[in-house]
Amino acid sequence: MGLLSKKDSKLILDPLADDNPITIQVLGICSALAITAQLKPSIVMAISVVFVLSVGNVVISLMRNIIPSKIRIIVQLIVVATLVIIVDQVLKAFAYSLSKELSVFIGLIITNCIIMGRFEAFALANKPWRSFLDGIGNALGYGVILIIVGFFRELLGSGTLFGFKVLGDSVEKTGLYAFGYENNGFMVLPPMALIVVGIIIWVQRSRNKELIED
Image (cartoon, rainbow, N blue to C red):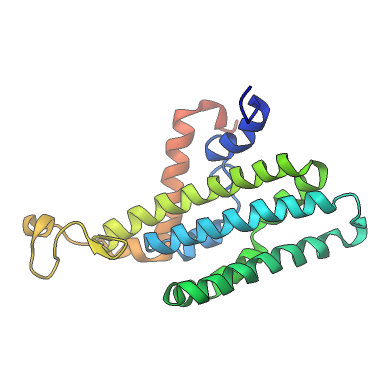
């Protein structure tokens, strides 16, 4: 028997597609708009949320039987704030320029409704292992959308990926630029992130008719 049962596997796989926290549950949209102009910050934010949500889910699950109901939200906020501080300090220590680039958005993980929603809806009612898998699944589902949006926004908006020129040199008119290609400056503006997310939702729902609301 494998490490994961079919039921456990669904905790990871479902949020990647048919129960994605951004495209289906429409949660965590703010960071998708704010930090996806480039691919690198998108990946770092995705990894940060994977750490915070997976570890946070386990901590809340371990404490679920001793947390007084009246203060459970406060306890959840303390847990997520502690984990976010750890992420912030690690970034400042090992990737200071990226930490400055992400700025307040790392701190805003504390108010990410995906995290608080999984604490409240899943971790408080399930054991640590399943809570860990749920955290991994939902964080990966969130991260995949961020990475897709960041990929296309940086590629089409700046002609680069990770800061490296992949479409040629726009100044010297080499690569695609030699054939008249121009960067789409609109792609680096926040509204375009919403449009790209909308396109992803359209593609996803066109492939799965069950997701279309009556």
